[in-house]
Image 1: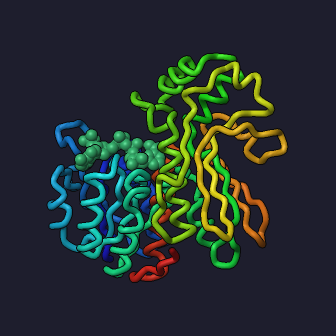
Image 2: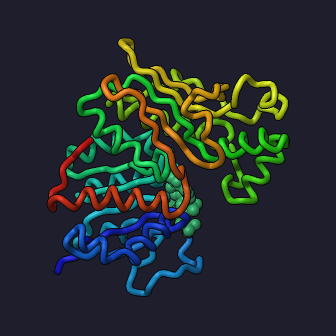
Image 3: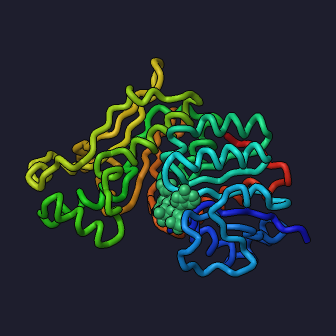
Amino acid sequence: MDSVKVAILGFGTVGSGIYEIISEQQERLEKVLGRPVEVAAVLVKDCSKERTIPSDVLVTDDFDDILRLSDLDAVFEAIVGVEPGYTYLSKAIDAGLHVVTANKELFAYRGLELKQRAEERGVNVRFEATVAGGVPIIGALCNLLRMNQIVKIEAILNGTSNYILTKMREEQVSFDQALSEAQRLGYAEADPTNDIEGFDALFKVVILAELLSGQKVDWDEVYRKGISHITAYDLAQANGRIKHIGRLVIDGDGIHADVRPISLTESHKLYPIEGVDNAIVVTGDLVGELVFQGPGAGKLPTASVMVEDFVDLFKSARKPVDIF
Ligand SMILES: NC(=O)c1ccc[n+]([C@@H]2O[C@H](COP(=O)([O-])OP(=O)(O)OC[C@H]3O[C@@H](n4cnc5c(N)ncnc54)[C@H](OP(=O)(O)O)[C@@H]3O)[C@@H](O)[C@H]2O)c1
């Protein structure tokens, strides 16, 4: 039986999670797809690093090796930053491959271009994992978009910031102490700028705004403020809980988006969301308020929505249906 043949670009937290799920869940994959899935190759930056990858899987640092593979169907992309991911995915699309990405920075900057390129080439680009990790918000919005007008989205989109604010408030510790603890627990990178200055949440807000509008977002129009200026005193004095919120309001003038710390009172749906979780409150004109909550990052949650994306692409037919 023909297998679905894939390559994984990046083999860090997320890439290795994709590999793990595909290797360990062959039975489920075969049941849903009707054929096995084969990881033919893995692309990394440094081939000399020790990894537990079987010898029949090609490990390379040269993307042309991936393009040279025969009968490849799709690539998963889990590299960090806009480049080289954008170049690799453009070439993959041009070669007729479907693409599933977790790379929010790349998708915030160049996602619309990739989608257009894929449409022209007759392949699909899936990006569920770029917003809120394991929470399937992109798919939910696509389904809602069929009939509802989305009028507002308010969301906790960065688990690291939410963890830091929760820790500072609950334990009356300083920002620096809470950040160090987040780094010790692996929630924050050695360079935490993207998380604490709001860039990570901004990327996700831009991706959501472009999904809703189908148009390129003018980044200068999106106000961004992080949490690094917040003190334990600010949290104690706040009327409610200060949370770092990404917000989109859609009205007759278009989409208004911002990313900033906001004090929420107890009645707000995001008030009880603590620690590293992400949560998204979506208001549709017909359905009203919906709340989505779950792990916004992590190896298996993120990898699992990517494999879900992939399965969705291939399950109905060899030629996938474009729902976006
Ligand atoms: N971690 C999460 O929970 C999470 C959640 C949602 C989305 N994401 C997104 O998923 C992507 C991957 O995140 P991650 O946490 O898995 O990162 P990571 O652990 O740092 O892994 C990055 C991988 O990319 C490879 N890589 C880096 N530069 C490369 C290059 N120039 N060419 C080829 N490979 C290259 C690295 O290779 P080496 O192994 O050789 O260094 C490594 O295997 C990011 O875009 C991130 O924003 C992550």
